Length: 76
Image 1: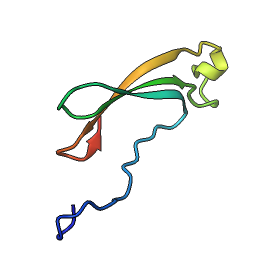
Image 2 (image 1 turned 180 degrees about the vertical axis):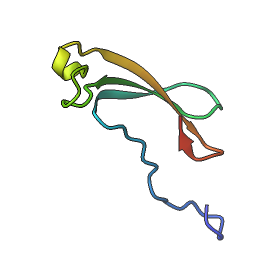
Image 3 (image 1 turned 135 degrees about the horizontal axis):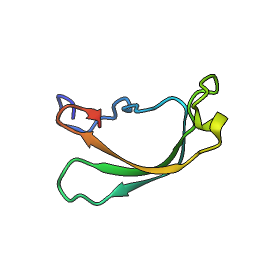
Image 4 (image 1 turned 90 degrees about the vertical axis):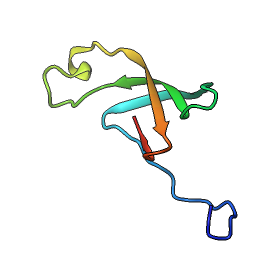
């Protein structure tokens, strides 16, 4: 809200990770708690590492939960 008590659009909060492909994102019903999202992701790592999933071929999809902390304005 701005000083005139009207809703205002602000810059989006960015939360990104390197070497990750996100397939889907859904909102989780948490009632009045901080918003939470479930993501289906694959971490493919760096190709220069010999233990990277891209090099070893052991790629796995993971379900990751992210929570937006409204008080601190960051994603955990």
